[in-house]
Structure formats: structure tokens, C-alpha cells
Image (cartoon, rainbow over all chains, first blue to last red; front, side, top):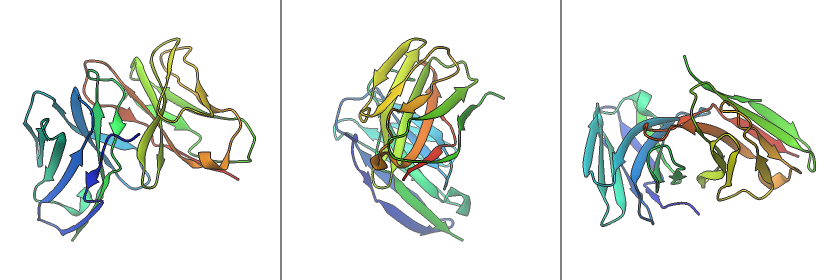
Length: 112
Length: 112
């Protein structure tokens, strides 16, 4: 079964605003990853956070992980129209490179 | 540049026919995965392989099979296609110790 839920299912914001997406999962994990999927395309890896990390940054992306609550959040700052896509969290029980379990995703629309 | 390619990109087949979807990667990754993506379900793992001659069942493996005879390829076979297997199929590869998985562009399969 899917690892967990993503919240919200859909998000619509204005360009320049921040977008926050949340992910919950059920089992113990080694790491959690976020992916982006543009319409009709494959998934692209954005960022990985290990279970012993609490926060990670990459450009305009900020990911947090709370293993006690089994939850993660992805923050995109100063959003752009090009950020319009679906965003998925995925958890790995094993080390890097092992199989991933995906959430249902959040559809983000950034209006210009 | 290294890449992962899927073929065909689109396929329509009839119920009961055997269908094989191809996945080829030039990353030289040991790990390869097949997922299906359906609305409201995110991505679900069908089969995966951690190396040549290694194959494992995922969450939704019934009606599917894979074989791994070399590092580059992991073909997915639908033994007897069913309408419930209408979906978008994604192949991915990754390497233990490296971050993130690389995804193909997907194959849209319709079973009529």
C-alpha cells in the first residue's frame, strides 16, 4: 500500500508566493525524497533528506523531516510559473538507491 | 549523456494479449524499478531488480513479470493484458550510495 498521504492534494498560488506541501508516512525510513513531475513527463529528483537530518536546503527548496511524527514538508520559496507541476514524496526503508514508496502527490499551480 | 529510455511511449493492445514494455538505461546502475501511475494512487511499485539475474516483486506484481539478463535492460511483460492494467508505466534506475532515482519518460498503455 502507499506509504502515506500528501497534503494538500492541490495548491494554487500566485507567482512570488511560497508553497508548502506536506507528506506523512507510516513506517521507519532510511531517507525521504521529493520528486517533481511536469505534465506528461517522468519524475525528476529534487532533494533527499536522511532520517537523522531535520532540515535540508537546495536553492529555493527547503525540506524538513520529523521522524517522531513521521512527516515531512517541502517549501518552495518565491515560486515561479515554471514550478507548476505535481510533487511527490517518496520514502526508502533501505539505503540510498533502494526501492521507493510514493505518496499520492500534490498538484501545484503557480499563476503568473 | 547517460539516460534512461522507455519504449514504446504509447501502446494500445487488446485484452488477453502479451505485451512487453522496454526500459534501457545507460547509467550503469545496478538498481532498476518499474512503477505504474494511476490517478489518485501516485506511483506503485510493480517489480524491481538489484542486479543481473535478480528480480523481486513489488506491491502490485500480479499479472506482470520482469527479467534482468544484463545491467542496461529491465523489460516488463504483461502476460495477458487486462483492462485494469491500463495505466502509465515508469521505469527508474538508481545506484546504492548515490542519491535519487532517474526516471524514464513513461509508457502510456491502454488495454481495450
